[in-house]
Length: 333
Image (tube, rainbow, N blue to C red; front, side):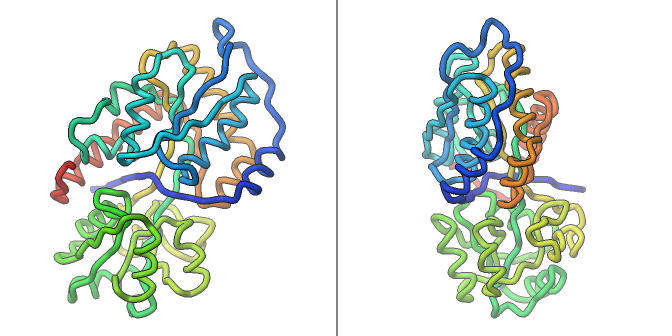
């Protein structure tokens, strides 16, 4: 069976880089809007802190979307509870097209299986607009781990007690490891959760933990410096940032595929013409060469699909994450 799972990631760019990338691309001409939409500023809710990949993507898209619509699109960070606070806020907003949310796999696909008593329904309370971008993880080991490819690592992990670190229980790094453990049939692969992504990277480099399914931007500098060894990327295709590193699927675990994805949503009930208008404008933004260049430089691949295709994708991700969380025996919090 082929599995495919995705989750949100953190990514950092300098404000200068972001400003230059946005300023380098001209505004797009407006198209006819239904009932003069929009006639006032729009809020784009980000359910994560400033500096996260979701936040950076939101700021890139919001600047250009405001130019296209002829109104300001203001990013509002409402972080907390793994994104659930911001998602609940956005879901409860008036369905008039003036509140958008830059969501992620965690808010719209994973959290329903990890958290009890959510104040929103991730599937019923949002209308998907488009999948904005995706990003892989990378399996890394420290210098003291002798394995230099995925097959050798699996063999070593099967014969000894290996461990893998993550930025927290139930997050994408954790679930990437659980999926790897299951598909590679490793009987004892100990998960060690941390609070945040920096500390586990340090411990893998120091040899206190054997491996990590790392956020690509987080570990890329250490890979290039030789402090971490990249064995495979979690996506189904190689990343241009590490062209010589194979996918885990091609390196020994056929069918393995884990990517992070980030998408634009509105509360359910927004009129269809507004949904279509927003989709059209954001897809055009994602096709712009300057925007694509910025995203690809950070390891994120722009997507830009239809509301129907994105809706089907979100439903599939919701169901698949529920299955792997259940099989891994991870209890809802």
